[in-house]
Image (cartoon, rainbow, N blue to C red):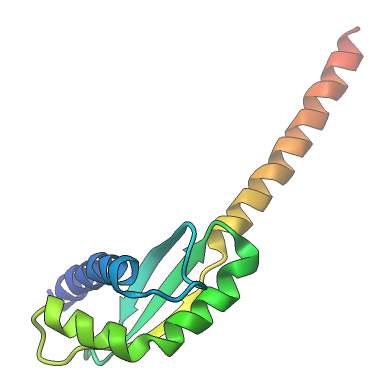
Length: 124
């Protein structure tokens, strides 16, 4: 039962934090297409790891630095948005899984493209 509550709170944090970042943060480093991929709160809900991904991979590190700098503001606003006894302390982490997945898809496409090209040459 506790895991169910933890997952619900993680989704609430994710939804509200995304809204707060888009509306409140005016830092130019936090622009472009980004998403919060997942939130992992601890069992006692005192801390939460927030995984952030960006479409522009080269700007991801600067974005994470900006979000770490604004963590206090984001925590305060999150405390107003959700009703918990303790608002979790936010730890922002760069998530490169989307970029890695795109890389793997490109490699697979290249390999499969080479195989189909080889099969076409063999059949001729």
